[in-house]
Length: 100
Length: 217
Length: 105
Image 1 (cartoon, rainbow over the protein chains, first blue to last red):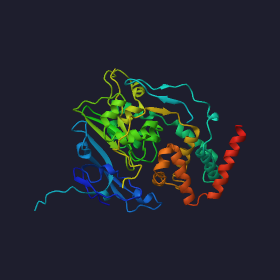
Image 2 (image 1 turned 120 degrees about the vertical axis):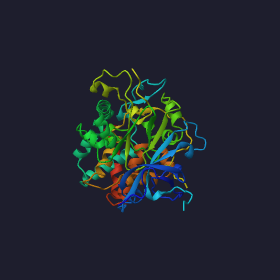
Image 3 (image 1 turned 90 degrees about the vertical axis):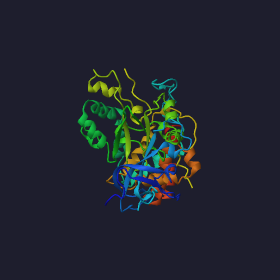
Image 4 (image 1 turned 60 degrees about the vertical axis):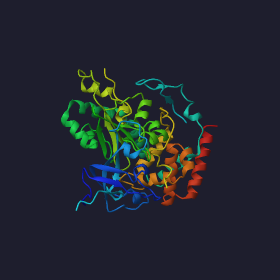
């Protein structure tokens, strides 16, 4: 299966807050980040958690976020980042001006 | 809580000291969860899901894992560039070169440099490369560590006695999915004359989590 | 809605840099989980263990220790899957307590 996103892509984590078993922490939802690695394809933990197979596999990415984008009052270094493993179905291309 | 309690007080680098020993395990109260553990183990053995021997051996395997395994990999990476490349690509395969079984869950290694300081957390539960370096310390699993490290890593690092310069990027990895992480700490200055075995002894568990750096000599 | 275990970024006090040597029963819980989830048995996945812990609810989540959460989740899911029954578990727990009382009067 092919990964939808590539290294360097600007992405945004979807804003959604369903119940159930999720591995997308709340603090990144709705936030902009950048793909820094395409890790591989894995069965979906949201389904595995209930004894189901979680297929088809989902691509998993390292998404890097600027801490200043995540926390309005971030008091550390301006270059500080957070890297989170995020599944493809939680990512959208970051909103960009249409270039046509 | 049975077992010996250890608290860390005081300044950076001070090793945790042991408090006076807790009462013997036999004197510890037999809680509902302890009874449930024994009950479940007994039932699963009775139903031949596993044998008592398999359970005993698995506890031995758990006991056999320690940060020393990670120390070996770190020391080799410091002296052997090609190995370092392999370690940064796939820790499990690199560990196998030392006949260390790091298990099936993929472990990734992130490298500290003069420009980047990595620190590992699992905000959602407490994922940790246990099959390589053993069980995590209580504080790694605590509410305070899981909540604050991702948001104010420098303040948390300061509580461990670690100060990172402004110009260095602090990069927090939240292990949310199928990977586990370890940090490749920077080789301390003044260790140039040490052989690989001695280098491995310098490596601490906390430096592989990223809450401390290894002190220059 | 943010679930209780999803705590990244919440305010909290200083990290209490303490640790304890793991008690034998805690290592047993870990060992049970590793055996149940291995390739030979595949009776429980890590994802199910986590889901079970998350579903314990905020009260239990905060009051139980790490491995208490594990054994609670493991037990609930084994019951759910029919690997053990509530009845045999109830009896086995009482037997375990009685055995303990005899061994340590």
